[in-house]
Length: 179
Image (tube, rainbow, N blue to C red; front, side, top):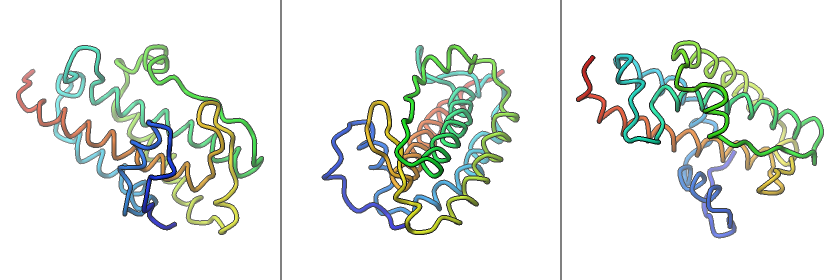
């Protein structure tokens, strides 16, 4: 998969922001490296540091990791539906309702990291097995319209980078948090 070179044709602000993170980068390399990067970023933090957001109303590291795990499950469905039934609808996801309804604030970090890494590993194997024409299969996202498998992979790579940056910022602040 070629790195994205330009965002001139992208109108959706969210899509544009996520894809801006992967300009000039190989999305598959980004996706493959994220589980190890996550583990390194959270490795030596205590529970309080993991559960304290930068500001009221923002997510903590544990909530971001839980979100990444859940989004990976969403990706599993979206990619499979696009590959097996090209042109099918892809339902939108309200991340705040998921965070609240699925109790992200009470999640177990190790379990969420393990889930994320396992599903992501399966996705990397799947992506590396795709033929050229399979990258062009697509789903019809409820809010953003037609999204090819190639586009979805790029979008999720940008999403990873977005949240890794957030975790890095929280981590810097968390050094001052003691038990």
